[in-house]
Image (cartoon, rainbow, N blue to C red; front, side, top):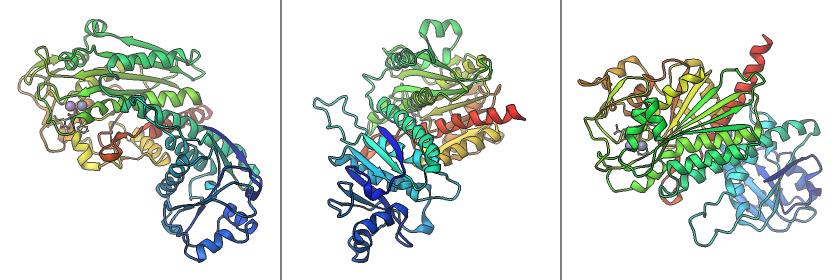
Length: 505
Ligand code: BES
Ligand code: MN
Ligand code: ZN
């Protein structure tokens, strides 16, 4: 998606479609007012006659507009001023770009930065705009015999009021574009079926990303033999029932001037299909367990954004990938495995496999002396029950890290909610036969899963994002969401500023 920032009179902008937001109450915003002046009060009349109600996410296309150089005019409702927040802007943007993506328009000139919010600058709204545009033109047709027609929209112009904000708007748009591409990449990996997107496929994706990075991303793939030598028996136990070999994928991005600067590590759960194993799942909706690598997908998507934006920080991405299948060789309830850390785990349920691959990846992360480690996993149905598809569950052994992630989630409107990780819950993992069990019973299932991981994350500031509810959408709109690429990218970009600040003090 191409973009540019323009400050000319919106009435004079030659574009396939002018797009202006409108509140239900109050005066017309800047661009809308100028278009109204130039078009014999077209907008005001539409509103007065009740032909357009600017309720949130209401969209109206005006195919011809007198006095305007744009070919079309699109009005987008923002709802009531006092109820307007980040979420409403995103809803309006999504509605507008979804409509635009269906029209034969190649270019759109949009004025969403007119709809300001306290605490959010023009860079922020420019970022939201580009991200929304790119998400809207996303198509997944790799598995269709005839392609879904691509959206015509390929160019977005941001109409801003004041030239002194051009640079900020451009910088924000650049982040939004990189983020949108990262989100769409994560969606594609998530949407690919389990017979295509295997652990080996993910490993090949990492190699490809490394090869195309101009030397900015180095990639190492650990195969089963290497994992065996290392002692990652817990990770390996999950893939034992599968024909697909397990992989530990490590991607290293060195952006900090000091190559020794402690890296931020992302760890993704990459179960490319979760049948439950011997503790097999019920049949209903089992296809959705191809999405059990959405944590890994978000790590890939975030690395893609990072490569586009090149922040001056070091980032290491680790993807623990396996397929969880029942078979004569598969792990069984009651089996005990020794983790890479040396702790033994009694596997009471083979469907609690995410934590079994993640625990070894978390131990592997120790070798990088990380500044922070964040794992992302479609870990528990319990988290989906607790938070639905609005918030990712956030668990952490470090309150500063938790706050940074919550902030990043708010800023990118890819929100997380802080859950308790109290000592009190740990005893649910007691085992009569091993150091710990891999399940903690039904109560607080998302928390005990996080407790399990915490036992392996005691050497660094660590957080866990349970994206079981947020990683994909079910039902008719079934598909991977690309979350939490927004949160993670913002988190990493903010670490760059943090680094500058600590250097100065
Ligand atoms: N991948 C699932 C979690 C999941 C289930 C995500 C449904 C989204 C929707 C995970 O591997 C799993 O099966 N977890 C079990 C844990 C239980 C056995 C303790 C679960 O949540 O039921
Ligand atoms: Mn499972
Ligand atoms: Zn799973």
